[in-house]
Every structure is written in structure tokens, then in C-alpha cells.
Length: 378
Image 1 (cartoon, rainbow, N blue to C red):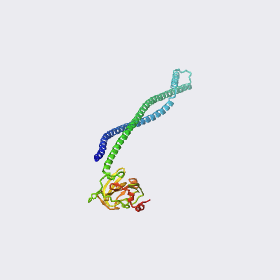
Image 2: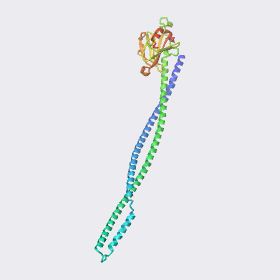
Image 3: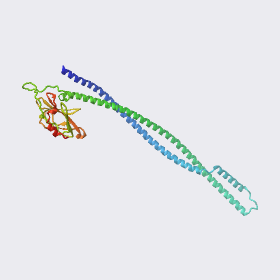
Image 4: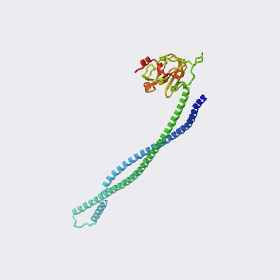
């Protein structure tokens, strides 16, 4: 009944854990699909932002070209205004007055007593008046051309300013669109981050559940080497008599498992060796390897059967180089320390325990004290 209850207590959490894991797998799949869709949406929005920025760049170039053109138009306009400042009404008045004078001179009859010098003077006056009319006519035409230029430049300036105003409106719209897109991207990134965090939490939860399940299975498998509780497996028996061998252990029966260490900590059961870097791990006594494995929370495990219902357990940060069933000699190298930090150069610990009849012994009393002093690097 006791074994059935233990089996049920072990199997039931596994079933519940499997059910939870199955549900979590569905959630993880859904969250992963959601994150992929979120990434796709953000990528599309980023592409749209790039298009808007490209359009903004093109419109800005147009705006700067237009502003440069407007500056040139304004410069040309200033010059044309300066040239067109001549009073056109005054020119017309002078032209008409000169024309009337010339007509009056030409229509006046010559007097009989008019001398040759008077005739010459009249001729010179007519010539000068005609020349004056020609000059005034040319000036009026030139001034008219300048005025036409001013009018055309004004028209170009108005067109340029109207286009510039439209461009400014387009630029403002593009900037607003870009700002809104960035806000939407930030919002989607926040959603994605939340989804990713939830996804990571689910994965971590599943990993922890798997690890917990693995530990429970390993604990069941490694029940003989649990260092914190009494071992409940049958002792080896003397085949001749059938009685349990209860031969007592004496001091200095076991060699030190580490060739070099920094110090030790011990209580009524096992001994913890503190080490640094890579060191040899040796068998404390001859025997046979009956178990090798690992415990996630502690490190690797090596258990050696020495006969007479006596076993030793090594547990911690080391890598073993033997396998189940190997026969080993006392002080034989069975592995090397590995602190798993600073590329194997950091500090680490190895727990060593002697068990007799499945009970943890006061291991410190079974070690050679001289060796402890000699092997310690302190």
C-alpha cells in the first residue's frame, strides 16, 4: 500500500504537469503566431514610413528648388522695376509736344525776306525735332518692354508662391502622417513587447515545469544518492548467512577525493570541499562505479560501491571520466573539477559523503586528517 501511495504521489503531478504543459503549448503556439503577425504588421508600417520619408525628401528638394527660383525671380524683378521707373506718361507728353512743334515748324510759310541763315536754322531745328521724336519713341518702346518684363516676372512670382504654398501644405500633411505612423509603430512595438514577454514567460514556465518533472523523475531514479534525507533501499546482504553486514567503519578509511582544495566545510554527514580552477578528482577507495548522472541544482553525481554495504557519493562541479560498471582503484583519477564559471577558472564546491547501510555517516571522521592539512592550499 505504501509503495502504491508513493507511486500515485509521483505519477499524479506528472499527469497534471503534462496537462498544464499541453495547454501552455497551445498558448505558446498562439502567442508565437501573434508575434509573427505583429512583426509583419510593424515591417509593413516601417515600409510605409520609409515611403513617406522618401516622399518628404523629394518634396523638400522641390521646395528648396522653388525657393531658389523665387529668389532669382525677385532679384530679376527688382532690376526690371529699376529700369521701368521712367515716367511713361511724361514720355508720351514730351513726344506729343515735340511732334506739335515739328508740325508747326513745317507748316509755317517761308517769308520772302528770310535769309539763308534763317533757312539753315530752320533746317537744323527740324532735324533736331525729328531726332528727338525718334529718341522718345525708342525710349517709350524700351520702357514698354521693361514694363512687360515686370508684368511677366510678377506673374511668375505669383505662380511660384502659389506652388510653394501647395508644397508647404503637402509637407505638413506628410509630417503629420509620418508622426502618426511612428506613434502607431510605437504602439504596435509595445504590444509586441508585451506579447514577447508573455511568450517568454510561458516558455520559461514550460521549461521550469519540464525541469521540475525531470527533477522528480531523477529524484525517483537517484533516490539512493539524495544527500539530504535517509536512503530507503534494501542493504546488501551476506549471501552465506542472509544477515545484514554491519561492519563498522574506522577513521582514515577513505582517501581525499580532491588532490588540492582551498578548504572544507562539514557537519554530521558529508564534507564539502571548496576548490579553485581545474583539479584532479580521485576515488576515495577501490570499488565499482554504480551510478553516474547529474542534478541540475547541484552538478554531476558519481556513486561508488566499496562492498560491505558501503558506498561513497561525489556531488558537485566536476566532470567524471568513468562509467557505470567500471572497477576502480583507490586514488584513481575519476574526473576533474569544473566550476562552470570564468572558463573553468573560478571557484567551486564538491560534496563528499560516505554511506553505510544506506545511512549517511559522519564522513569527516573517516578521512585522513594529515592528508587534509597536506592537501589544503590555504
